[in-house]
Length: 118
Image (cartoon, rainbow, N blue to C red; front, side, top):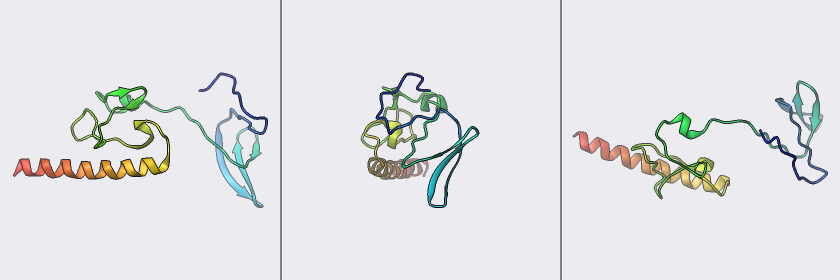
């Protein structure tokens, strides 16, 4: 993943080793790999992931994100998505708000289905 050369400031270091542990020892934060232990001020761990389209067959993907409407509904009835998987901006507060909308939409969907069965 990310095999190309990075254009980063000198104080940013990319370690291409699998992290085994993140710990704090004697007040120092460390990432432990099989090869070494690194101190850090901040760390981002990138990993390969499975496309949502592979996890949920038939799910519409648009620009590498799950396509949703304003109620966070996908093209599959009863399937809702929110957060980073639906696109930019990748911010926790946006994800929390969308999660709330998705939860309310899912509850409304279930209420409708329950009424249909009665």
